[in-house]
Image 1 (cartoon, helix red, strand yellow):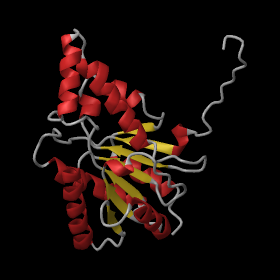
Image 2 (image 1 turned 90 degrees about the vertical axis):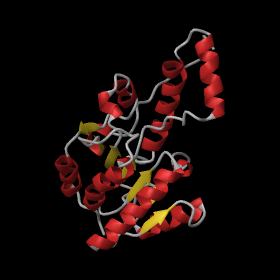
Image 3 (image 1 turned 30 degrees about the vertical axis):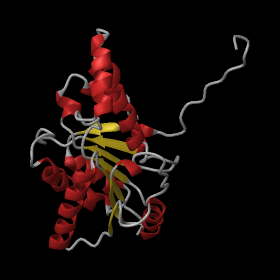
Image 4 (image 1 turned 120 degrees about the vertical axis):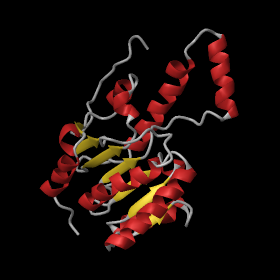
Length: 229
C-alpha cells in the first residue's frame, strides 16, 4: 500500500450556497413534556416556507406519532393542503414513491428514514430533526457498554455515545443534499446543539451549510428560489 497511487476529489456539492442549517431559538429542554408540541409549532412555518417538500425525522416512534398528530391538526386548522404521510401507513418504498410523485408532501418518520433513503430534486427541500439521536438510557446493551467503558477508566459519553450520535445525525442530515443541484434547509430543533459544550463537535461534523437561528433567513432562502409547483 505504501507504493499505491492515491488521489483525492473534493465534494461536488457547494454546501455554503446549497443549504442552511437552522437551529431555532428558545426551544425547551428535550426532556420537557411540551417538547414535541414545540417542535411541531416551530416546524410549521418552515414547512410553509418550503411549500411542503419536507422530511420530519424523529428519534422515537412516540415522538413521531405525537408530531404527526400535531401537524395534522395544524394543517387542518390553517387549511394547509400539503399531503401528510407517516411511517407505518404503508411500506417505506411505497411511502417514498408517493412522496416523490406528490412533489409537495411532508413525511414524518423515525429510524427507517434516517439512512438508505435517496430523494433527489425539489421534492425534498427540507429536513427537520426533532432531537439529537442519542440512544435511550434504558437500553440494556447501551448500559452494558457504558458500564464496561467506565470500568476501563474511559469516558463512555465522549468515546461512545457522542460519536454514535454524530454518525447517526450525519446520516439523517445527509438525506437533504443528494445531487449537485439540490438545495434546502436542515432544521435541528434540539437546543443542546448550541447550549452544550459538545454541541460544537456535533455541528462541525455536519456539511458546511450557512448557519442561522432566525426563521426569517430560512424564509428568505426559500423565497429566493421558489419551488416549481
